Structures are given as C-alpha cells and as structure tokens.
Picture (cartoon, rainbow, N blue to C red):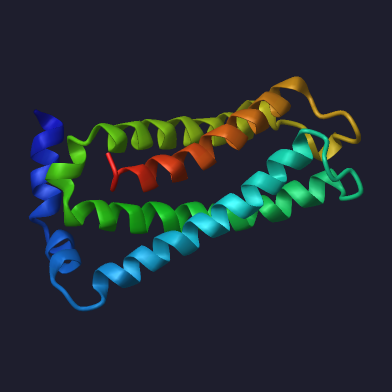
Length: 159
C-alpha cells in the first residue's frame, strides 16, 4: 500500500506534471538519463575489468580513482533523471514486473558499490599487482549488474 500511495503522490507532483506537460521536458530528461548511464557504464565496466586483471599496463590505483569519480557523476545524473522519468508514469511503472526487477538490480549494484568502498576496496592505495578476492567479486557483480539494469530498463517498453 505504501508503494502505491507513494507512486500516486510522485505522479501527481509538480515533477510528474512537468514530465507529462509536453514540450521538450521528457526528451531532455530522457537524453540526460542516457548521458548519465554512459558516464556510469563506460567507466564502471573499465574499472571492473581492471580490477579483474585486464589492462595491467594502466596503474590500478589511479585508474580506479579517476574512473570512479566519472562513474559517480554518471550515477548522480542517472538517478536524478531516472526519478524524473519514473514520475511521469509512476503508478503504472510501480506495478510493472520488469521495473521492479530493474529497481532491485539498481539496489544490488548500489549496495555493491557501497560495500566495495566500505570493505572490499579498503587499502586499495597499497594494492600493487594483487587485487584481493573481495574486490574481484565486487567487480564481477558490478560487471553483471550494471548492464543487466540497462537491459531491464529497455525491456520495460516491450514486456
């Protein structure tokens, strides 16, 4: 019941009205969402592959630090624009099974990032060639979760 009432409130909010109001608002936010996903996925996938051992010519610490900052900007843009896109049709989307899968995957991916920074990635400034197993598992989860989120998001229109 709480989800349904929150969806109604979001959809009937000023944000929901603005998103459905015509003009270029929906298109602008949709393009922003794609930009955010690009800024997130490109660096995240490269970072994950580096943590898993690819691209050893690139220094691990600097690569993870630089790409992590770019990915963080992408996450911020994708989440903000995603909430706005959701607001346009929150009632229908909140009950959509694929949307629920997408949101669950987003929670898994964000929890994975949080766990990496809190636990698996501890001491990464001292890593040389050996990346700890916990960090490699986190990279593998990330490598699977983020593309799955994109696929689920795309499938909402078709299921």
